[in-house]
Image (cartoon, rainbow, N blue to C red; front, side, top):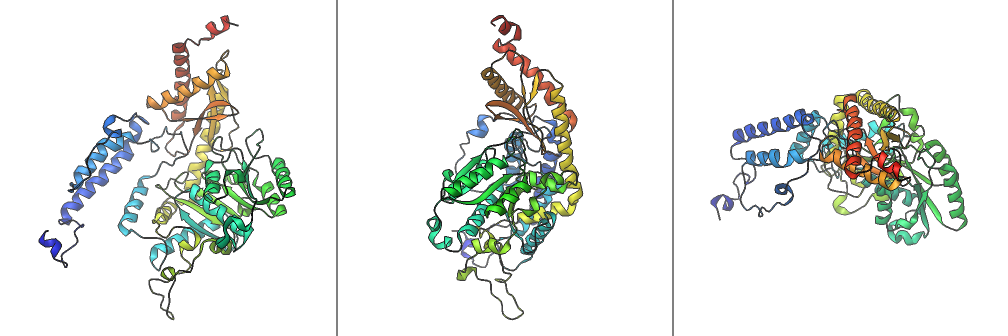
Length: 504
């Protein structure tokens, strides 16, 4: 046992012994990170991981390693093999691309290292400021509340919990779901899986979710929704929430929020908006009319780390009725009690705390990254970047329709384009297999990163553009490579039109 360990008044065992040397290494690490962002577009979007990455066999570290060696390992073994969402040709899933200044925000967050459960300290007021900005942005009523969380999946769980509490009442917190059997939720068949997961975690199960049919544009069929509400009420079930999509996961479809608002008021049902990426189209003056009615919803879930490009992970739940929100989660445990003495608040003051609006007491300072992004970029600049992605999607859809071998399979509501390579004479099964292979080849060759999904039984190439670095030349390259790969893979499989036509 070292003398330093025995000396209980010795300096920290974890801070650097030589701050000047550490500072130099930290600055070098920052340069490495900035260089990675600056030069990311020059490499492949994604590349297959070598065994040296996937089969790590290092023993548990017993002794420490120098900072510069750790940075070197990250630079050589991790940075080349990331998913690629900082690359301009990443459109596979709805991931944000981040910003260089976001790196600064992450450093500040790490330096402060705030626990955002509550108590009286400046970071709490930063989060409150961000929530006030968002309430203003979405034109929610006075008294609305919000909480920053890890993402829309968490925000949806919280929002549906508030909806259930509103329906059942305070007895829910002691009696649970037994206080009101037959609770029922409604969402379109295009809704994200996080909704069914939330119902599972709430103890209601996936059978509590009614999948409402969709119209030809993949938005919820509101007439079918009302018919289902009436049928369930007649059977003695208890509808408590309708979940609408503002940017559905497959095609980016937008449900008719105004019509759903009217139905929810008519039947006394909570309206929760899943706006994971689409809700932030409100930042664009041109796109805002497409989500009219969102200001009248009961709750809204969305992510900052998608279309606002805040570093992961940062999502949000907004609730129009702040008192209902707080009543769902607030506790009165002695160790969580806000204290004050006259005008002196003390460190345990500052109520209500963020933990009164959610389930986590230990929470990171993601609010600072959001605050940074809004302060530096401003809503107008962010809105222009979002609108440009939608213009790019519209132009891509037009380009698809101009190619005889390509087929557009869904209307473009926002930023997602679903199409497929569809030469004549191939069966649906062959087309599905061919398009799956095209997507995999685009990814594995590092050309571009779309994803695939299924619409009405047809495998499609899905291009979700939430990337501020994307240029039209990138999307044109995607089309060119898709056509070339389609022809190449057809030839390799012997699926040429001449051969197939001879068999008819």
